[in-house]
Amino acid sequence: MAIVGKDDVIEYTLAALFSGGHILIEDVPGIGKTTLARSLAYSLDCEFRRIQFTPDLMPSDITGIHYYNQHNGEFEFRPGPVISQVVLADEINRATPRTQSALLEAMAERQVTVDQDTVLLPAPFIVLATQNPIELEGTFPLPEAQIDRFLLRLRLGYPSEGDENAMLERFEDADPLTSLQPAATADDVVRIQGLVRQVYIDPVLRNYLVQVIRATREHPDVELGASPRATLGLYRCAQALAGIRGQQYVTPDDIKTLATPALAHRVILKSMARLRERSQESVVNEVLEAQSVPI
Image (tube, rainbow, N blue to C red; front, side, top):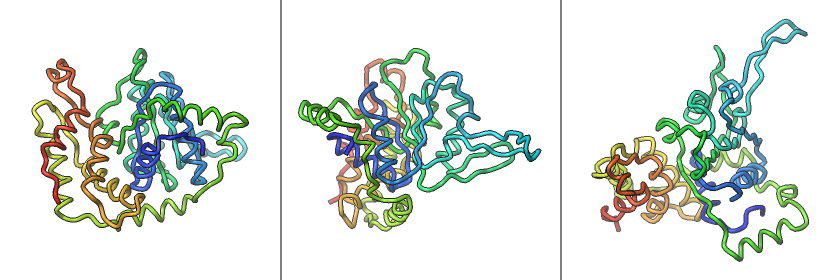
């Protein structure tokens, strides 16, 4: 293994992958965000591409271009790095909104349109984007349409003392990524994505999920609550998490566990709430506490 500890983050990452979602990793540099993305790709024998977002990055640098081939006298398509299976969008908030928008179609519809051609993306397809919440100079905030396309927002955090020592031992001789062997294939992931939809969720629990989503829109400190896309995403992710844990059905704990990483980044607080230093996570926690959990 290349990642030491962080079992919950790995579990959430797999749940997002198996439910067809994307992940926004918001944390300081050096935590292991790139290692997590590369480990996921190598473990699943998937094609991996990294896009380093910078202010001068153009949309065509992501989606690809048509170029003139002088040998045959025809225009040919040169695919961009987004046409892959596991895509790391590193420091996504350092690119301009125009460039960020190049990911919108890919993340929502699993395709990219270049000129008059539409190119379908390979399956599975997942975007893991990173951003540094501390160093904001020279960055562009992600628009709501972009943020809403991320199923989960995760934070890795610093490792414990024991995990940090274990990391040194694991990296002492060589980079573990160089010897990482696939545990499954891309076809296995696609098959699991189909099986996830068969995990049972009781209608009463489904109604509880909807009530939680709707309560984020009615909270007095919230200007814009979670979208219907969030409802469907949380539903699928709860099914995936239950399947990963070996359950045949979704439990209330599955939904409560995923509520903060799936909803907090989608909640836009009112200006007065921000002045009172309210956090998105605290609002989601209040919503969960206010809702009666079905037994």
